Length: 273
Ligand code: PXL
Image (tube, rainbow, N blue to C red):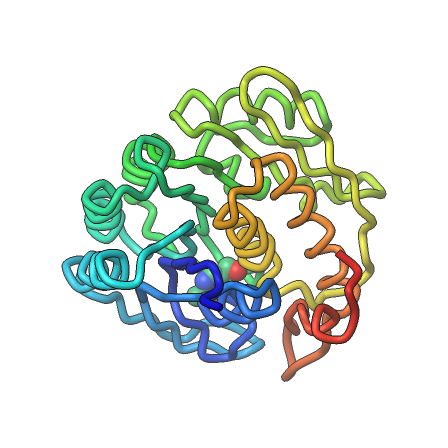
């Protein structure tokens, strides 16, 4: 039987830990068929990013349209988008094939700005395009607190400010905002906050003492996308994603001299989620 089909619009991490490699690994582990619209090739290992080649915007758009018109896309997500011209091209292609909250196809926008080592993955002048072009089309946006600061100017240090940030993000037009709390290091748990303008959903999870969290945001957004592709409502898809990422961080592994990746391999040998 053909599994659900999902699309990631994202960059390549040559180290295999994050980016579209993390997305495809997660899609596989979640039982969905993954497709890719590549936005950038990064030259990268566990220590850092030493080069980026950005894909021409029309080629990014063409990848989206090629898979959508033939194979079909049941849900899509974004990762690294590199620059404003790519973002504009992605928005146009998504409109043409019905990806996004106005179309029928759920669309998760993970506003990737930098790697966990601090390497920049989105040009500074692309933030406006990200908000105006993609947040307005998103079913769900999934920023971490560094991205929240860049996108809203709010420096989140507690749950109240996390709620303010969720309100501020919704003003840009997404249906739902998931404000991830993992970067709030002064608190014991990692509490993610999900909001659609009516009710705040708090999703607490344990904090693991590990530096091997490369690809954690990509893995979470991909796990959520795999569920939206199957018609699961957003709160349930996000709860699944949270369980998925907790187990993947728990089983993260060292690689190279820097940050190792989170691991969805637990999913191959158990049936925990
Ligand atoms: O985890 C965010 C991310 C997304 N995409 C690419 C990356 C990273 C982090 O390093 O390299 C290509």
